[in-house]
Length: 342
Image (tube, one colour):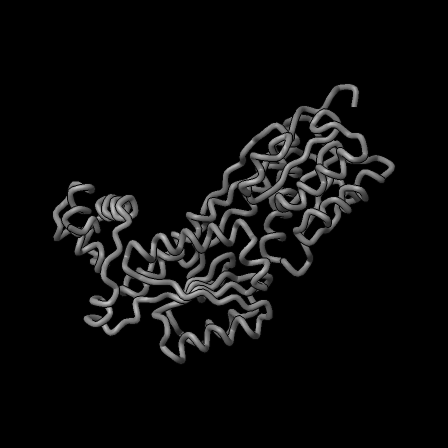
């Protein structure tokens, strides 16, 4: 006898009828949000996957969604945020009986061609496109009129989902200011990654402004999201005549590099210098001291993007084009109050 869960198994777990489960699986808009969430939760817990083949034959759809990541594969498959994001999207798609077709393209023109290939060959019913470094592929998406949700970007003509980068950076900066730090060094990301980095910089400057403090512009360095670049940036920051008492790196990788450089230079963490990162990667809790960072809730971002796309495919577009997933500050032992003697 097969142990594979059925509609009735899911119904029993969710406390609803099997007809209700069927309506959720088929995207019936009359199912209320609370009931729908209970059913989807039960489907995930039981690892229930509806028969995509049967639904595809009945609907004329492929029951597949394309995911385009405009990054080189080495970066895409090692980046904690992107891995979680795709995982979240896959969870939601699988719960509704959809498969996922992934494409990575580093060059914007190639990312646009990936979308054209998907749509021209009718390989997918819709697209989830991570905006990457600047959203250069978006003009083609706007003109195509294909069901699309863009992740990590804001565009009035497309449905978009992005984490609250600005709010996360504001929270980190406010935290450091509350600890007494005024000379806060910043390791920004590469200039070409203008979308998220601009939002994080806005959040940082807003926190300084709200505290009636001037941000020390002489304490800004850039890295490329890698630990070696954070290592070098920390060295340059600490070589200043008036060095920072805290360093805020715009991703965890650069923060890890900064921590190593500070230790090698004989500085205690966080007694001499506090360090904070961004993205709350799995390693943030494992380093010594554990790193204060910002969780972007990447799984939720991916799930929300998939939900919106599936609603579009079912003829139920959301009222808002822009959807922001809140971020959360995770305070750990890498940040501490500024000593009075400093």
